[in-house]
Image (cartoon, rainbow, N blue to C red; front, top):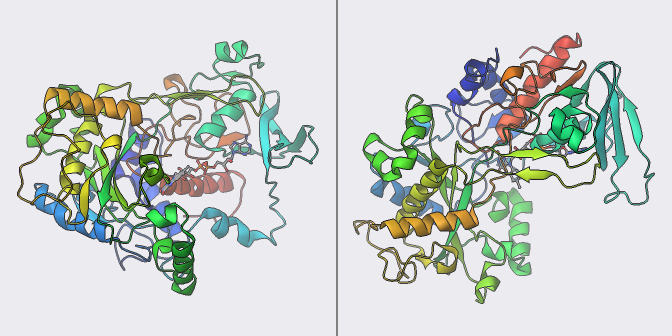
Length: 511
Ligand SMILES: Cc1cc2nc3c(=O)[nH]c(=O)nc-3n(C[C@H](O)[C@H](O)[C@H](O)COP(=O)(O)OP(=O)(O)OC[C@H]3O[C@@H](n4cnc5c(N)ncnc54)[C@H](O)[C@@H]3O)c2cc1C
C-alpha cells in the first residue's frame, strides 16, 4: 500500500523535536524523487522520475467501488476525492482510491532491493552479506570501528558458527529497523546503564532513550460475509490451485488481476468534525485539545473495507465450506500509547523483551470504538454485504440493538444508524482489547531528538556519545506519521544517503 504522512508530521520532527531540515519542505523532495506516480500526471506533490512506480494496481474490487459510493452518502461532509495523499488537509475526510507500490505495466511490487541493490552487481564498492546477524558494534575510545556478526544458524546451518568481524574505515551505519537497531545498540553497550548492567552488557554510553518511544498504529479487523458471486481474494488467500493459476496467467500476461493488486482499494482518513467530537466521549477530550485541534491535517483514524478475510483460514475456523468475506479494517493514526523493546542478554538469537504499549491509553480505545461504528455503518449498506461474522465482532449483550447475529442482508441507505448503549460500548472496547493488532508500522525506538529529551541520534543521525556511528531507518522518527511507513522509511534512506555522502566528501549528491 502506498500511503503518505501529513506535512505536519515531518514539521513536528523539525520544530517540536529540534531537527533542522527534517520538515515537510525538506522531506517532500525525497518522497518525490523515489517515485513515478502513474496514477495521474502533474499532481503537484508527487514525483514522476523515480525508480519506484506507484499505481492503482491491476484490479478494482466491486466491494471497494461500493464503499466509495456509499461512504460519501452516509458520512456527512465526506465526499469522494481523487487523491488521499496530497499530505495536506484536503486528503482528510475524503473517500479515495488507494494507490499501491505496484508498476501498472508489469503488476510487480516495487521493492527497494530490486530497485536499489540488485542493479548494483558490477559495483566494486558494494558487498552484500546476506543471512547474517549483527551482534554488536565494536569501539575503540568510543569510536565505532566495525561490527561483529554471525552467519545466521537458522539460515546457514552449515556455515562457520564463530563470530566474524567487518571493519569500517570511516563510518558504521545501523539500519536494522525499529526492532533490530535498538537491539544492536544495546548489545553494543549503548542504552540505559541500569538495564545493561542487569543483562550483563558492559556500558559504553548511558543513553536511556534506546528502545523506548516505540510506536505503531493499533488496528482492528472485523469480517463480514459478502455476496458469493463477487470476486474477492478469499480463494487466493486459501491457496485454491485453480484460482491461483488463473490469476497467475492474467498477471504474467499484462500485470492485471488480483495478483496485480492487494484488496486495499478505497480508504478514508477520518478526522471528526466539531459536531462529532461528543461521539468520542470524555476519554478523547484532552487528546483532541492537546494534539489534534490545532493541526488540521491530522486524521485520527484510517479506515477501509478489505476484499478478503482477516486471516487465511477463516472459513475453516468457522467450520464453513470456502466462503467469501469483506473485512472492515481501521488503524489509529497517532496512538497516544508508547511501548518499548529491549534485549534480555547479549545473545544475538535471544528473543527481545517487547512491549507494544497497546490499549494502555483510553483515548486510543475511544478512537477504535468510533472507527468500528463508522466502518460498520458503511459496510451494512453495501449491496454486496451479507451480515457480520458474529464470532469476530464485539459480543454485544443479549437483546442489544447492535446485535451482529440478526442482519444477513444490506440495509437501506436511509436506515437509522445503530444506537449503542454504554454496555454495547463496553463490548466494543472489550473486543478491541482482545483483538487489537499491529499494522507493522513500528517506529521511534532510536528517536532523533535532543539527548536530554530521550533522544538516541541527532539530526545528522549520529548516535549520541560515540563517534562514527549512525542509525538510518524508521526507528529514528521522534513522533508518528499517520500513514503506512514505507514511504517515510524510503525518504529517511534518501536523506541519510545525502547526509552521509556530504560528510564523506562525495560530490554530485545534491537533492
Ligand atoms: C508485513 C508487513 C507489511 C507492510 N506493509 C506495508 C505497506 O503496505 N505499505 C507501507 O507503506 N508499509 C508497509 N509496511 C511497513 C514497512 O515495510 C516498514 O516501515 C519499512 O520496511 C521499515 O524499513 P526499515 O528499513 O526501517 O526496516 P526493515 O525494512 O525492517 O529493514 C531492517 C532489516 O534489518 C534486518 N536486521 C534486523 N536485525 C538485524 C541484525 N541483528 N543483523 C542483521 N540484519 C538485521 C532485518 O532482517 C531487515 O531486513 C509493512 C511491514 C510489514 C512487516
